[in-house]
Length: 287
Image (cartoon, rainbow, N blue to C red):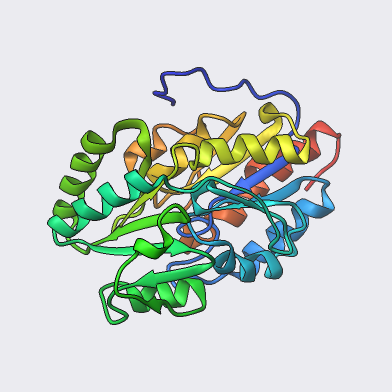
């Protein structure tokens, strides 16, 4: 089902680690973990399968998920820009170069697209009443810091986000940004209304590689699950990849298999069908 230009690692042996995207995958559209998702994560641990998460969210916005699911392994925030321990200690970070941040901000301003900046542990906005701010407040569990500008954090930006409810406008800005910045940034949609700018090494593919190296698990025995175009980079690294049923056709085409939607407990069902059941069969057991 893949159309990747680089060969996918060939799966070898039962899955030893599952890495999940959060929004659109692990949680519902209301940003909630269902009882089935919580149970699935618990069953992974009981089966000896490692479990962790990767997201475009900042570490602070991932902390409630880590706590609820009792995740003890390192996880990746900012689309892989930061590797963090389960108690929120920073392992390493790739931050947006100053010239790239300035160029991206200038483009967003010129096109009339709101800009958010994540730096120094804070979510910074010019307009706290701007579009999608209430939505993000629910997602992260905390509000933004109102600022006049972002010059004071240049060189320390973990993620810059262009925000718009106009998909045509955001698509045109994305195309212009790719032409302007080329390989100097990772540019991806984390949601249809968010355009993320991060360091070139801050992508979910690099996150999967770093997590596997840190945890000590072969990429070929790693499974990943996600729903957005920024998740495709991790599909290319893992031995087994799962696209959510709510993903676009483009994303689904890059995955090994397709699960049900996040509103229909797709994550939990995928864990049982594609991870636990094959693992039990390999050990001669049942699930």
